[in-house]
Image (tube, rainbow, N blue to C red):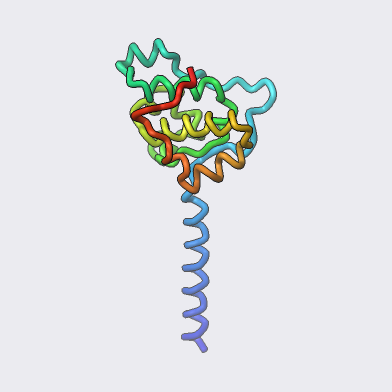
Length: 147
């Protein structure tokens, strides 16, 4: 009886741990748009990018996309897991400094998010699609123009 109970406890603990790990696989994001009147931190401008030496087309396009859809970017996770190593709270955070210019995941997600938002997709639809990895279809060598 003790052995069976012990085995059940181990199985239950393992199942709970696995369930918690599954939830943490999705990086930080906001499940709602910014509150009315809430001012988000500024996205780096094209001038700031150039001053930092970030002149590749995908870098410029990704920052332009983030600037054009900040409320949607705010609701997206960033799958490079910068929430863990840089304290970011959403994809928007990646473009408040140089991080987004140095990370292909961030850039591809921003371009994808912008493109899907222009097609009328909701933030939830885009987020679910990003989690499925569909943003990987973005070709950073030939980014579509958003500027």
